[in-house]
Image (tube, rainbow, N blue to C red):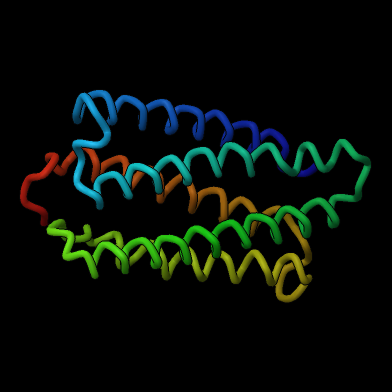
Length: 170
């Protein structure tokens, strides 16, 4: 299968990112409940990105072992990853709107305004690849989707490290 080694590499990086997210939780506070709502939300998004990257890095390999052709593997994987991205983006807007209505005092980091639109574009590319439009059901857009998950998780990781719990936000 094309790109199998790269998928294993992404899985390894995702495991590291998920592990480091646990360190953030340990170093920031003794109890996750002591965090402000947006801090907890960013932590859960970090876990969703890291564990999503891990799951979706291994998914095409599993599908391939059922004997399906590469084009079918990438079309199926792209459809599922694109749906996951759309679901996470939609859920993040719902949760963020709820926090805004509740007058959550924490502001959103600048990446909050960048990550959802970029994620939507990546999801669109994944759906186009799955449909065989523009791309030919290949591995490239899928890898871009995985890299987006890792970049999102890494960005959230940095924000959780930089921002002090309950402190002023940039």
